[in-house]
Each structure stands twice: as C-alpha cells, then as structure tokens.
Image 1 (cartoon, rainbow, N blue to C red):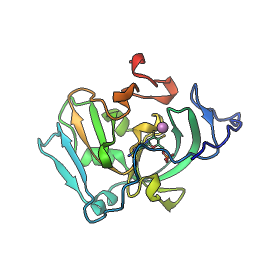
Image 2: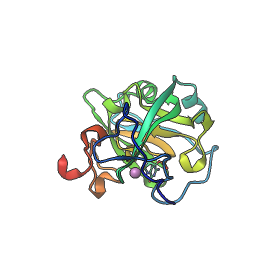
Image 3: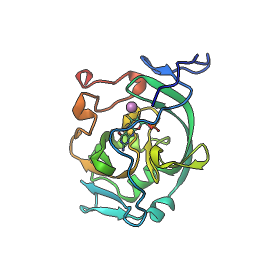
Length: 200
Ligand SMILES: Nc1nc2c(c(=O)[nH]1)N[C@H]1C(S)=C(S)[C@@H](COP(=O)(O)O)O[C@H]1N2
Ligand SMILES: [Mo]
C-alpha cells in the first residue's frame, strides 16, 4: 500500500491545516477486512437510549431510512486528504431519530467489526452531511472500503468514520475509542486541527 503523491490543491478548494491533497485515498485500516456476513449483520443502538433499552435494526431496515448523498472529504490523521468523494446511503441522523439518546446525552461511541470504535458527538451524527454510506461514487462499497455500511462525517478526521460499522452506544461522557485511546482527539474536527489528545 502506498500513498499517492501530493498534488496541487485547486485554488478554489483547500484542505485543512497540516493536510496535503492526494489523488486517491489509500485503503487504510487497522486489522483484517471482515468477511461479509449478511445473515448475521445487524445495527445495534445501545447505552443511554431514550427508551432505556437496546434497539437492533436489520440491514434492510437501515436501508429503508432517509436516503442521502453527500460530497465529502476524507482527512486522515496521517495527513493525507481527498476532496469531494461522493458517498450515498442513509442519513446518520435518521438512525439517531429512530433510536434517540436520553435527554442531555451528547456523546456516542460508534463501533464496528473487530472492536474498532470512535468517539463522536451526537451533534456530529446529526449533521446533514453525516452519512451511513452504502455506495461510493455510485457503486456499492467494496469490502475493503467498508461494505455493507460505513460512517462518513466529512468535517471530522476520517478515523471517526468506521468502516464495517455495526452500531453505537450513547454515553454520559465521551468514552475513548480505538484511536482516541492512542493519543488522538475526542472531537477530531479536521478544520480546527483537533488531531491529538493533548489539545483537548
Ligand atoms: N473499522 C475500521 N474503520 C476505519 C479504520 C479502521 O481501522 N477500522 N480506519 C479509519 C481510518 S484511520 C481512515 S483514514 C479511513 C480510511 O478509509 P479508506 O480505507 O477508504 O481510505 O478509514 C477509517 N475507518
Ligand atoms: Mo486515518
């Protein structure tokens, strides 16, 4: 795996501070690519839910929710960025509305296959541009890019976009996910360069 060479940023577009533009996102994740298991797949929302219990959704139930398409960047904490990737799928906000948090809950820990997780704010999930993507550039996500479902929140660093996402837990306070436990920022807004935990 290699990172494509840095290319010029078009004058009308910019990348966040400390990032450089690459032509194509390298495939990047920790650990192996999970095997597709559509029969066992579900999406679980738990923790401090408004209803007090866990809610589970089958893939077809998730896919029946509000469709969205966004042009969204990837900003890796390893400092490469890509601009205007086309993601389509379901609005993350639709899942929050289907399985809302208890009053006053502001944080979630989003989790994926093999224990990967990321700390996210409910506000960021509610963003009009937060998508649970099934497609990239009009074609179904490949397995290595996160099929069947991948979270993309373009203004956050892309470690906060779990591939193979399986659900989230609402938490009373921010709970550190995979990279947040390893020195990275709880909020992770790329445009504010919230990269490392010492900046919190
Ligand atoms: N499940 C899972 N999702 C993940 C990761 C991971 O290790 N596991 N890595 C993240 C990181 S650090 C980046 S930069 C992007 C890379 O996405 P890409 O492989 O489509 O370029 O996936 C994110 N989603
Ligand atoms: Mo990354």
